[in-house]
Image 1 (cartoon, rainbow, N blue to C red):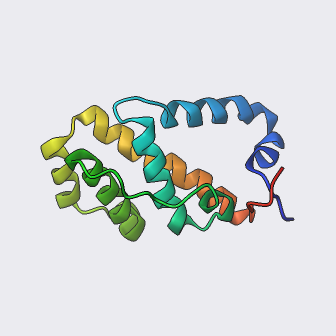
Image 2: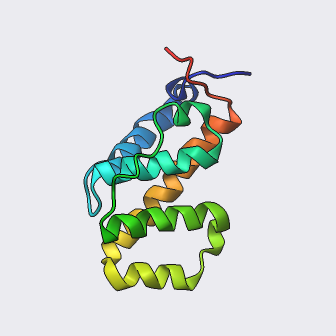
Length: 130
């Protein structure tokens, strides 16, 4: 079955819709990391996670050049290559500059966004959506 829009997918499981959307909104909003940086991270993830719908929302801008943003984008790139085998040296680099709250938010956002994008890829969501 070809599903063209994520909300169509999630609506089929109505009891999860509110919780899923609340978590997506919470993780994507300003927190320890800015929502703008998180959008950049989402775009980086989308290039590799196979969801055409997610990729259609835009390519990475590469405009976040401060130390913390570069560490975050670097973490996402390492994660995409290594998955759960992120080297301890990568985590140590984060710890040298970022707070525990920022690190946990980065990892949680990365994992949840990856799950969303993998679902979109599996269900072959496309940019041709209503």
